[in-house]
Image (cartoon, rainbow, N blue to C red; front, top):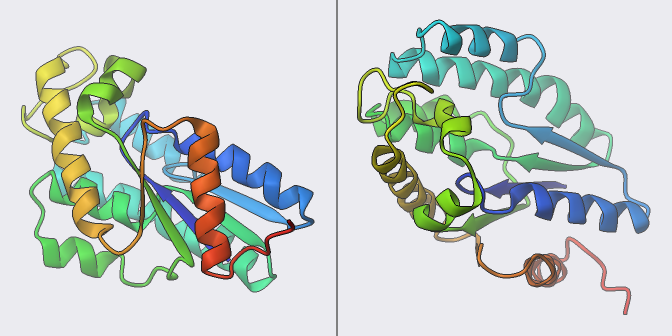
Length: 212
C-alpha cells in the first residue's frame, strides 16, 4: 500500500505521517517512509548546487529532484511495496510537477517525466494558505523551494517575503488543481481531526480495517 502526503511547507505533513506510522505499526503493519530530496547520492549534489548558486536554471532544478525521486522510487519505494510493506511518502509526484510548473516548465514535459511512478493507493493533500504557512515556518530557512521563481537570483540572502508568499500561493493552487479527485483536508484542523479524517478515508477505501 502506498500512501502519499502532499502540501506546501508547514501544512502538517510530518505530524500526520508520524501519527499514521504509529497507528499502522500498532496494528502490526510494517511501514517504510520516504521523504522528498533525501536520497544519499543525490541530496549532497543538490545542496552543493544550491549553495553555489547553480540551481537557478529551472530545468536543472527539476532534473536534480527528478533524479532523487527516481532513485528512491526504484531502490526504496518499489522494493518495499513488492514485499508487502506500507510506504508513506512525504511528497510524491505532485510536488515534482508543481515545482516544475511554478518555474515555468512546460506542463507536458513535467507530467511525462513522472509518468513512470507507481500509482498511490491514497493521496492526501493538506491544504493550507500561504499566509498560514508563513506564520508556522521561517521563509528564510526554506528558501530552497523559492529558487528560480519570480526573481531570477533569489537565494537565502535575497529572499523577499512577499515573493515567497506568492510562490507558496501559486504552489497551493497547483496542488489543488491536481488533487481534485484525492483526499483534500483543511490544514488548519487539529492534528487529531486530520488523523481521524484520514482513517475514515482508509476504512472507506478498504485500506484499513476498522477495529471497533
